Length: 250
Image (tube, rainbow, N blue to C red; front, side, top):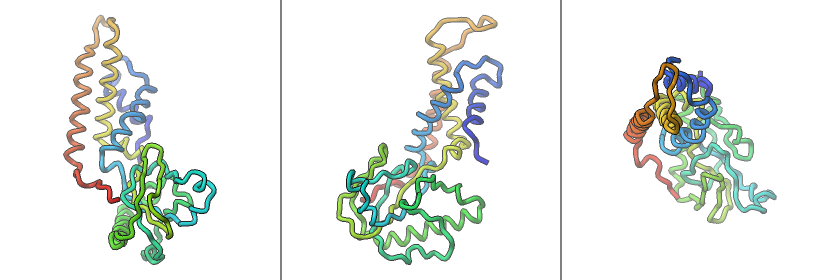
């Protein structure tokens, strides 16, 4: 079972307060903001296991839609972090894999969060799914001469085609995994704790006051320890990441 954001906040607050030994300083709302606006974005951009390879089938009849005529671009689902390549595909046998694979057509609702855990629940099914992905990749590798030139902006999710389109297409992309899957990752938890520890140090360092029991927080020490936690996670993530794993093939 995946960890919820409320459970993650409890873990973070437990660490910051040493299981309630000290009063809570950082509001839960600020912890949630740091998780969503800073920690998640950093991991999705830098941690290779925060994304999964997916293949989306796009029929060429999207060219006739009023929206495309008006804008001359497509808006991809928000979970699509980047596109590796787009391949012309007019051979329907590519989809006959011998098993029932999930339908990944953009025209038929890929925006409903096509994450791995939504249809893979056991180790056996995971193995089958990996075989499906490998089969797709092998087939697409045979058609590299049919790749299309494009421009994709991962911020606004706009896909612009830079060449003529005359067939259906297969998009090879990296999509974000669900947030809840990252919440349970040990690196992610340590990164969030370090981030929140730094923010707490910045908050208490703005004022000079004594806490009950006539003690003061050491703001500089909090900031230093928080930064050390984050730096340790960044170093581990960088060591795990193969610098060549995410090469764009345009």
